[in-house]
Length: 152
Image (tube, rainbow, N blue to C red; front, side, top):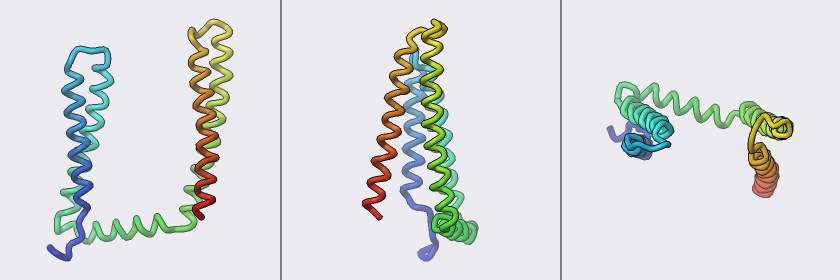
């Protein structure tokens, strides 16, 4: 087993951490509070995610799955270094970023109109939140671009 390539133990630890967080969330959700339904949702998400990570760890560490796991690692390495796919990921990220900014801008206008027509109460809070998020997105985009420009 010495030459056998295995998944990292950190994957198993992350799985147990998720599972434990889910159990803690489930315990907290069993108390009678206004957040119980939300806590049940988070608990289910963490328990399921943790269980999947743990099962994957044990599945891929079986000796009979060694060849398939090595092939999978090699394919992942190729996918991550493929220049065309890297360029496409970058472009799709840019389109998602721009689409998000456009949607936020349109939402600000829509919530302003709905607030002016008294269809929605407290629309000002929503508009201010979306405006702050829009500014954050733009500044984060500029900061990340400048950081990457200096890096390369």
